[in-house]
Image (cartoon, rainbow, N blue to C red; front, side):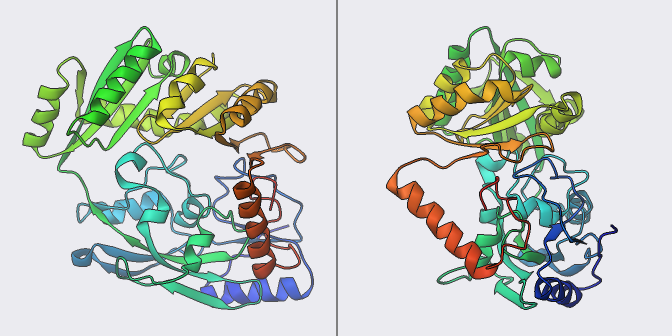
Length: 385
């Protein structure tokens, strides 16, 4: 079955309305770089691909804003912005293949979330098509212009289970004048965590700061526990970092870019090497990160200043013990990527607290409000919605 490729937002909305009126299960996709992410792909009666919606609708370099259609490739968009020394401050995995709509719908991010946040911090408006065939605009082209409920925030990370994003408005950031990375190697985890804590207490404000465990470090040609810190700014700023981080190895130019490309694309590389691999995302308080990392013998990459750790498992077998530990410690966890056959697997640790249960009940109500017959990307939200 060939996918439908709408030529405009209006066309996409019409396709959704017609399919829904005939009670067809609809898969909405971009470039399918997220097919192993989130919940299982259900058999669909109709596949709608947004890849033909790839225009730049409005670009205001002086205002640091841009509006684009959802199907434009992320890498192509960054290339357009780079001509004006600007960027969308996201560095998600699969960046060469992903569409910007897919990045936002999956709420994908990378190491620089420490400095710039996630899509929720960068999207200032959007348009989406509902299953009723309506086009809804939310936000605008001005930073911080939203008052009250912003429906667009519901779409970020919803995996297309509520509506189909047709266009997005972003706040932009200038590209750093230059970047350097400072790499520290430790035989024991404690050394890496102590160094991380000293940086967090300092005046330094890195772009990124990741802890890489020995099995993952080997893929980068390094040994031990690695703490990688990226700094950005003028020569004076970078020299300040060098004075403060005298015990680290300073990487510049191609070496600086290469280490973060390896870190950013570690997940795609892992999934190519491990067809049965499972990637678990665990959110912990910063003080609990070391406890989590001590539990795991395999590769991990931790956003050391954000409390997000990615755990790489060769199969489902190692998941049970980590799931139980997360429950015991009150950590949040989700299976970020898994083999295509994952129907019936527990992918999202919701928790049993009243707050967690209330939040999930509200999510189900929102899903029913947008898609009462559960036709749009069913179960793509980590197998739950």
